[in-house]
Length: 215
Image (cartoon, rainbow, N blue to C red; front, side, top):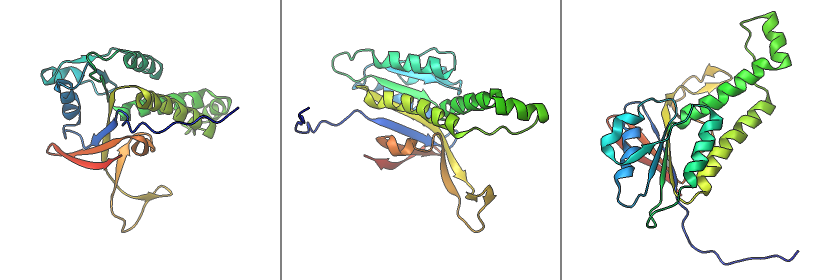
């Protein structure tokens, strides 16, 4: 097979944005306010575990996408949203509130599968309160599920915003606080999220936005 090449187009890809930070700092407000921008087409808003998506109706003409809270249904509805065409060349927008809740749903599913496994059932018979660890094979599957969501948002011709919780935490090593270490900032989602997003904004109280990184 012969090698086929082409010159780069110079075209900038549509952004995948991360808006993370403290509670009550305005993450959802700032994200849904984008729906009122005249350069945006339709906005599809996914409420995943937050329960407040309807409260911001005055901010703009966003549409709430109904789903049953499972990863499978969320993925199906996100894919359906990415297939909706642009109107007048305006990119559509997807807002997921929150990525933290999506990752929690994936992890909860892994925990349930670990408890149903043969080894998990044996441990629970011996001790109903036993901690059943998630094996590496299940973790790999969980990361694959997360990757399918992120890659779907990266590859579509539109703008996506993932909202996540973020906070300062005590530096830990082997499950113990590190003496004298400064607190670390932790984004509560899959650990590679900050590496793949196009833009990263941190919200702190009172409603202060800081640009952390941009591609």
